[in-house]
Amino acid sequence: IILHHTETQTAEDALAILTEQGRAAEKGGEVSAHYCIARDGRLFQLVDDDKRAWHAGRGNWRGVTDMNSASIGIEIENPAYRYGATEFTDVQMDVLIELLNRLVLQHGIHPHNIIGHS
Image (cartoon, rainbow, N blue to C red):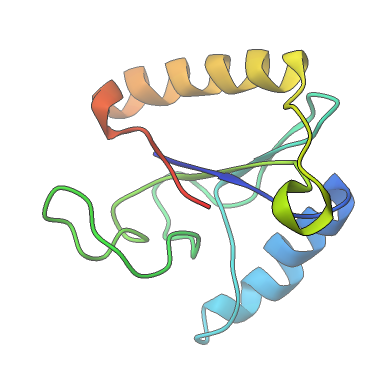
């Protein structure tokens, strides 16, 4: 599981990027993720867990060099560096913890394999 911040001003901006442009990823384009968590705690599933999303870019983790094929991407709404980082909300963290617990159990993911990426 790879955790990201959206680096957008709103969840709606993030969803536009992760869905409309994300569809272009299948043709070598932009970006997508499996989940997005809005500041108000809304949880959006954008890609099925067993499908590839385009969130990890280039890199590797523990010998895996195609992280997009081997991971679940979770975007957490936060303006981050581009618009001035803010604290993640308590409700976001509650939703994230619940989602992580479900994914860990459902997919047998070891907690050491939950990483952050910006």
